[in-house]
Image (cartoon, rainbow, N blue to C red):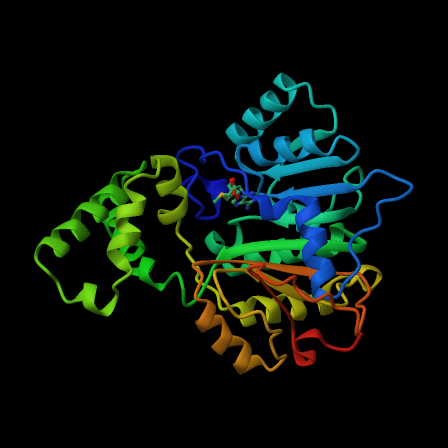
Length: 331
Ligand SMILES: C[S@@+](CC[C@H](N)C(=O)[O-])C[C@H]1O[C@@H](n2cnc3c(N)ncnc32)[C@H](O)[C@@H]1O
């Protein structure tokens, strides 16, 4: 690993992806049905920040689709920033820029020219960071979220992602032993699990989802495998723990810009449309019922609108929930 990587695997660039949940319109919709005001759209251009923007493909698409808004992407991998900047230039986009920066440095000192943002998003970031880096990311929120802003965070989630544990564990151990860069350790782990399947190993009875997961990974590119499975840190979070750590970090954030309320949402295949209770153990029980492998959650510094929650239209596959007051603290 390079010195500057903090254990994140920077041996090759990431893959290219777009995630519709990161679009401002989508986030606004989530805020509304969660009972919160989305950022105001009148009077000035909306500002959008992506922490850990990777190759910049998604952010460029959002910039192209929202020409009246300003976008900034930060990432610490030089090849990502180079690619993202080149893509924006090639597409003639003037409302997006990319800056190479490390979360630790940004947490310590927020560049004055960045300012604050109405939307701050991070997709697939905290799953691969050490606890100090996660704290730095959350500190970046207290620097960057404008009054009334929305935060989006996605992460590998318990319990839906549990079937991935054997593969990740074996791939990491192979990497440690062979000290190899590139995707070879992950590919070896996939082959090893194939061998276990051929031998009808009992692990597949305990974890029926393991083999479908491994089969799906065979279609993914090597860059994805490296970033997803071969960094030093790999976290599967319970949603309630993510919510609690966001809430805890508020206390060290500047009093000027605390995140006074946190609401979260999840999009899942579910026939249940009812609103969740705010009780924390129940929240985890319902997380088990959802069992999605990744989770998209949101935080907002906008005013809650008690009693103004919109009901999800019949037939939508949307779930939203308000966090318990014990997580939120006084506000
Ligand atoms: C799994 S990739 C996700 C990239 C992008 N969000 C996406 O979904 O396509 C994680 C990203 O976080 C960036 N990253 C990891 N540690 C970082 C740090 N300490 N500071 C800034 N960026 C970091 C990596 O370079 C990488 O682009």
